[in-house]
Image 1 (cartoon, helix red, strand yellow):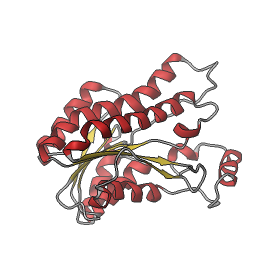
Image 2 (tube, one colour):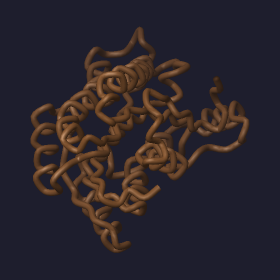
Image 3 (cartoon, rainbow, N blue to C red):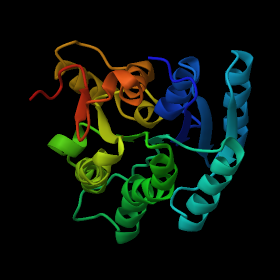
Image 4 (tube, rainbow, N blue to C red):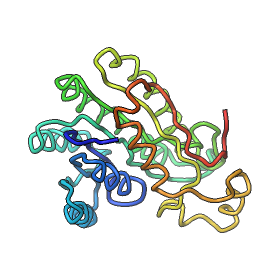
Length: 247
């Protein structure tokens, strides 16, 4: 699955799934532009990639800020000449039962998880069209497929990503650009570390494989979808959930 010669832009890359995806794509030969709000963590990631013989650069970015998205992607293209792999991974939660959910928490989650993906896609597609090759990969969630009490905003944003994925796949498929989504199940990250042991055990019981997933499980799926091995896959949602949701 060599990605040599390709340039990947990854949002939410300072930790968790995004960080692991950056390491994996770099290992496969891609040059990676890593973006997130925490520049210190990004610089550590860039150093790790460089130490392993890869090439990377860090870009401070709040994906909820449209101007920053435009400026950062423009800067990444200026530095590397192109972006032909986009991984929309940035995401937040603001959990609350819908009857108590504040409008600001609804808006923040939709802006970060869904609107940012639209903005990043919009800004990177011209580079992909120029190359006549592109891979857009959106990180959605099993809860965007089955819902989750207390996460109406999160589930809606992740379900929206699935619809966005399919629409973009239809728009750009004729230009040799694919658009797919990866839907993680319960993955051990900083975002899930704050959940109660009771919730974690309940999630494991629902899982035929009987364990939580790792960021590496997701990174492997992203690397596949970014590669030429997935050249005939588009508009697809790849479930990486241990069997938590089937079908």
